[in-house]
Image 1: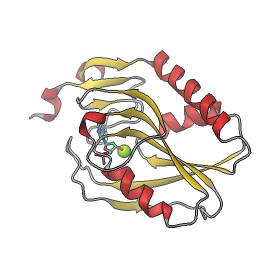
Image 2 (image 1 turned 180 degrees about the vertical axis):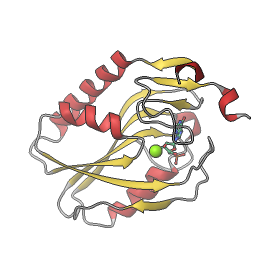
Image 3 (image 1 turned 60 degrees about the vertical axis):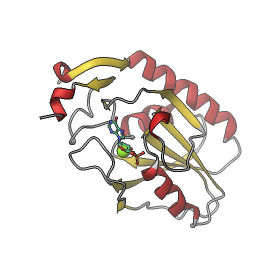
Image 4 (image 1 turned 45 degrees about the horizontal axis):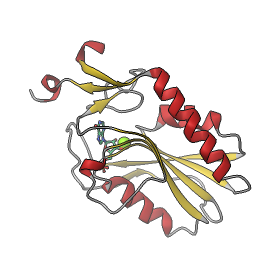
Length: 179
Ligand code: IMP
Ligand code: MG
């Protein structure tokens, strides 16, 4: 697994620091609110579990899953909801948790869909941001770290469903997907 990684971009230690920093800010900003954390499956799982443990507030946790990718490194732009949320969003201050904001099409679709369900507010936290590739009109309220325009894996992010369990974020060797 590790041999398929060209370069480590964000180490385990840095990932932990990011989770702590963002959780502290979120704890301040959401104090007194009715917080509902919604993780976008599957990529956000590690980030959500680390981040939410450091948020010092009562909160509800839910998940949503959209699909667009398949075994490719570019978004198809055609988004489908594979698993919807369980909770009724009415009155909640929703915090959407994403692994990476790339073109932004996936998150924009989810954001617009959830906006119609009477939440009190919707905010977005993304571990990684690739601003160079943004197409959709969406911005994250909280960003872990900006990354260059390279295909990255690990800490939840996959290529063709593999590499999610790498403990760091790394750039995948081009030879893996340019076969
Ligand atoms: P978007 O709709 O183009 O913003 O794509 C969002 C989704 O594509 C993310 O939630 C990721 O699952 C996936 N994605 C985008 N860039 C990468 C990458 O560099 N590595 C792995 N997955 C990625
Ligand atoms: Mg994803």
